[in-house]
Image 1 (cartoon, helix red, strand yellow):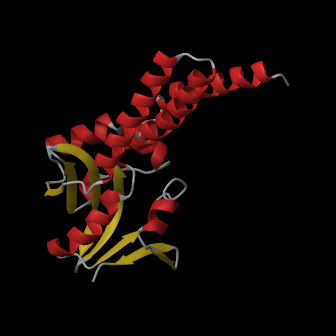
Image 2 (image 1 turned 90 degrees about the vertical axis):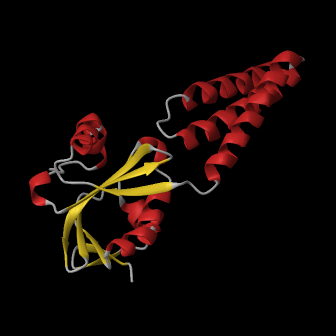
Image 3 (image 1 turned 180 degrees about the horizontal axis):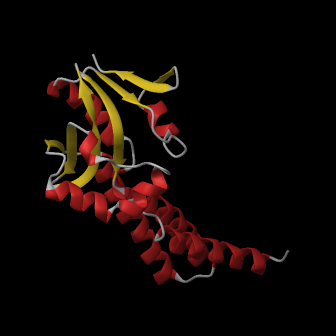
Length: 201
């Protein structure tokens, strides 16, 4: 393989990664992949002596790193307890229905069967939904959903800290886990008799 071909492949790789990054629903993944692609394209531009292109892509890397650093800082979440038939809650469930179905295949969200409903906000924007049935401080979770831009487990960590202040001492989850295992594991849920359990106190 000639040197020219290798250089061209480097350029194509950088371009593909930059384009692919815009398909990411998560802002964090978008900026990470975009940073890698821009860094590779910076190297390619330097090799072919296209200095304006190199400067532009290097600046993109710096911009991405700046925002990743901001995202990495502690997010300001707020837990809002709402009625199960709250109009904003039903709107969010309807708006994110397809994504919820892809994350939790076969899940039937029955708002009539719950007595605890929460909307988690981040800087006044909805970031997550938690639905379940509570009895004697034990919450049987029906839905623990994070909007695509907030899927870094920070909402789950916030809930584990915050929910005891709302009288909860244990979380139980027995719903679909195909796309949920890494999240449950990272938050310390343990499987007992087919049910995932997390003690909060």
